[in-house]
Image (cartoon, rainbow, N blue to C red; front, top):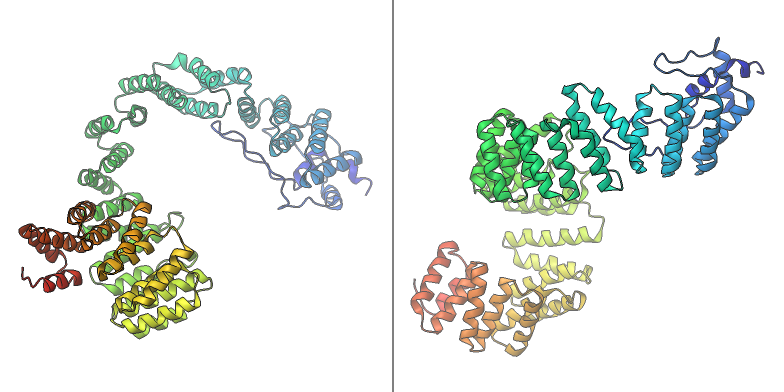
Length: 607
């Protein structure tokens, strides 16, 4: 075994030892990422290294593209190397770093300097990392990787003087076709510098010989914009587009630095008209139209994009959402189902389809195809637990709407709801399924059991209270609403519900007014609470105040019940034609509305 120490070289040891992985050289645009110590690949025992040495019949040959010294590995060197790695994995950095730096200087092996740099980076010691990278570059002057790390570390340490000559040489030596990318990479790297003003000045000096090119102007515009020098950015971007009128990146940069979208849309529209194949510019133009709520023109732009790439998921999604906004459900369903198909064809795509599947289910439900609605929900993966659980609850409701009440209840009973919040959701949905089927008493029984089981859940108690009122059990309603107020004092819905109930029954009106007033102070923009306030003022005989509140509510939300209440106030004020017009509009929207029917019956009116 003694002869093994003669045969094993330092190069062989470094190849055999499973030290923490060395990162690939960063792109010039990236600062070198810290390399943490990791135990994912354990360091081999000394015997394993020695065995590797015994298998070697001759010293390792250096890599043809890296000149490495040929250094025999002594017992002392082996011990120091392994001790440094183990200590580093144990959380220490300074001792291992000094060991590797000392051995790098002794052996002149650049890989030891590189490893020391990695240790310093993992410890976030910028100065020590830069010192190790300098040594690495000195020992491997022809290594592009060492050069890139050196530039990045210099910028991160705000040692821009050292980096300037290297940047200038890189630009000078770059082929004209590649120089624009080199400029962009340099600009991105300089954004990491702490001294932004110095980095901006350096970039201007570097690009001064190339300002006759559109690429240089684009980079200068982006740099100025990042520093907040908007006027300078705008001037550079305008010159970039003048130098190269068909440049996508130039017009997009000009759009970015222009600021006001109202000015940008005509710019992009003109460019797209002249350059119909400019896909990225067209997409940017379409997005701006969306923000301006010009949905139909935006859809036309996305349709042009879809024509070029029929399976593009992003375009299909945008068209689906726009079609929903434009009240075109058939088109929305076509595009969104196309989105799901496109994702199915590209399993590597990381976009989450759950939101789109829910929208597709809603679209199918709206056209009365409950089976299709459930089928879309069935595609939601169980890994997305909260969304999947909500989808199961909705699926049960759809089953009930299909007329399969027993199946819906069995489905809910079989659903595993492990958390109390989920169990409450099951109770609420079970009750709703029964209500939808007209089984109000059974729904009440389910809610009553749920309220006894979860007495501290204000959402369940609130829904139970509303159902109790529907059945005329006002004592149960009031009791549970007061419990909600105790458990959730900021729940304005509870105050409003009790206040409105008192006003509707024309009892304890002063208390009703106080409750509704408290709710309105909590949610002053809520049209339904405004409606309650208008109604209690009407009950108190304050017709002018009632009309004012109800008109504000109706302006915010043209709800049928608000219209009915406002109509009754106007009727009592003698404005009968105005009242009848409101009621006609309400009946056109919801001819089966109970409040409207009871009001007309009480007033003995036929519209």
